[in-house]
Image (cartoon, rainbow, N blue to C red; front, side, top):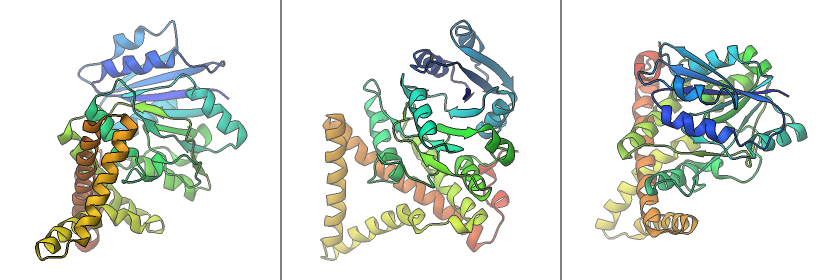
Length: 331
């Protein structure tokens, strides 16, 4: 099988440099290509990509800004591969990544897969804390922190594979962002394709963001979910309400404690301690454990606020998603 890595990039030349450098160390013995799509950047990565022309089969395209989904589609229509692997530009790829993907697809072929993300030891404390909150089974990271192969997995586009056949039939990513990856996955399911988690095909996802940007990111994730629930009601789940329930429960537990009932607050305290202990043990650093607690609350609150706003406009006011949340769609 011939693989094509598809990498959209927007004003991140340094990150694409690190990603391409990591791809030069792949243990996979057969050829593969890399397609870099510059999405209307004002600081382009053309010179960076040129450095790797003699080491990698890499091509570079510059297009006007239309969002990551359309940029991935643009790259896939120009790629030569039988199977496309989509990566975010802020990822670093382990040497055995493509070998692991090949092993999974040889053992049990699937037209769409997703892999988890991990943190390198060189990442900052904030990066490691955010990575924990985004991957832990104790948070909304949920399934991405699992060690099992799980059917009906919804891949995320920082580390996602799709066959050329499935891409052509589905027409690729839509205009929504974020949320374009589960939107594509559900359409693939409706076309009869399966998706699966490949737990050993992980990438190191840097997430070079501060706390405000992290909040903005998870807030948009929350806004995207009611849009997807409206489009695909058969795939709506009660678990999508958990962050909102968590935040409401947290407020109520404080009120009840003030009234003399401490049990709910003790449950939340136990949960906080559990996150602190597990994150501290994982990273061998107590300060990262404390930051992981903060990251978890930012994640839950940001997601819950976005989810509630989007749900109110779409389901209670009965507005179309495009009119209710225009900031979630590229033209």
